[in-house]
Image (cartoon, rainbow, N blue to C red; front, side):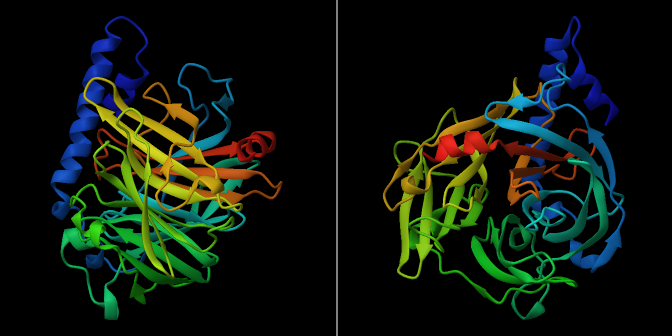
Length: 367
């Protein structure tokens, strides 16, 4: 952790070289995490357990502008660097928060689920408590033994709340989307699986389903949106599907700058937020969030949306893969992001970030 912090915070002579080394190392870490997917920890070896998670506050999103709070169209509301001695802690790729934002459930690409209470100090994240971690199961409560079967990449809370509700979990490599229950005991085995369109079966093993959301309003309320990380059409645009009672119909998300899609979240009016990430050997990691109007989401559409935020390694980001939305007690639309550390604590971190969409910005976007 210390060498990484030194590289990324360097501002003096030679920093360009050091940042290049950091970017190279981080890209290697990510690539290595992909390459050794079957070597990731197996949560079934430890069962359901209570764990301790430590939290270090991130006081400023931008490393050299501690007093700045507005980034793009979003307001910075704090963040945490999370860590735990539990071997299956890490790799978080899907996230959902309770209606009030005081509890969470997350899934990892190693096949673990995590539930926790979200602690706050004022309007800032303070830590996680009552943390429980367990293995995602197969049908009939069977153990998922192969790494390719455990690779959970997206999570959507569709009904109820964190204490009692229904989840959709999407898996990459062995592509599928399953229905799960969540209770005070944790995440149940799957109840059933969603029928995927035939062309989705052609997704690359490591570039498959990364983003799922159930539309919460608008003309297609109740429709499931599923988008692949990088499964493109002939023009290079990302392919996605609208899945409902009448089957599945395709659409595309316009590629801007070679970013991969890592998550999607639904807003109450039927609009969407799309989380994207890009690696380059010399620049390291970049992150972007786009907003898509409800009316733009339709079969056959080419969706571009509007960029709300773009960040790079001068900001407190990592391999950002998970995005969740909730409404605060003050009625604000809150965005929570979490990173996948690829179980590489030397070069990467588990970062949890929060932003708000100001009310006036959201009203302007939806017009």
